[in-house]
Length: 345
Image (cartoon, rainbow, N blue to C red; front, side):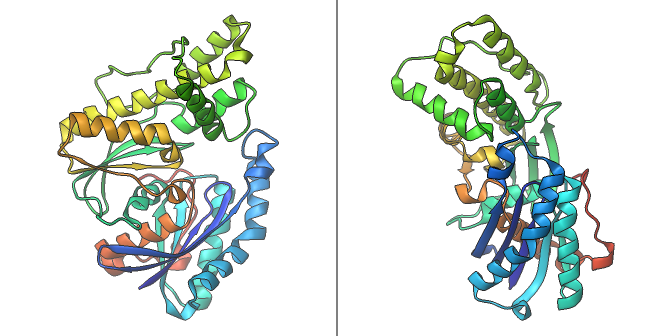
């Protein structure tokens, strides 16, 4: 079966076509119209500008995805679309486009939660699909979650951020240091330069809530600690790589510590990494190494980097597995679908 995925939760207009059967999901096209260059000049996403760009880009992006997949609307089983959470004006562009196409093409709709989409990126192009039960570490600009899944589409949030998510903290830290937007890639670049130099950083930053009894995260205090360090150091501009390494390691060590702690309690068969920050090389390497060392019976699954940031392939995959689990109950009449900026899992 073929499923068209549509994603517009923030600043990426994206469309993808997925071909799936059983547990196998193959991506035939994955088209993204990025707005990063537009928003970089403001140091963050401007919702009104993002919404206008979605209106311009969403339909051409869908057309390109169908064309690259070499199929027509008649081949589609359904349309999967991000319902939320996200910027509501951005979500509306994708949801209303999906509703219009569903009406005109007479196709059923599958609403998809954005974070669930990130988790299901781990089921794309994998030689061995994640085994249940699984523990998902979701790390993105707006979310830092630990989610336990006993089977397809059965979710239990066991940990979440109490304030800033990890990706948001990266962006704010980069802004403090006068670095470009988005903050994650540039901080990772400087941090890796410091690692390669062989000189350890002398900058000390806290690991927030590391020893709390729960599995929640908090990165607002880390951001504040970085600010105080910069204010005390007159030479911080000459030590950017050191500060980036210290900041990145504080986030990575906190994420991994909480993941291992949760894995010891819930004993999953698989651990998957998801979200935009899942592209971070140091996080991927250190998570894999520490799970292999401390919990060797658990399989670690890492998504392909092209499916870590916001994209429609993950939405199509999540839509397919929703259908795989619920059959026709996964479908929603077009007139009942509404964008939800506060959608809960």
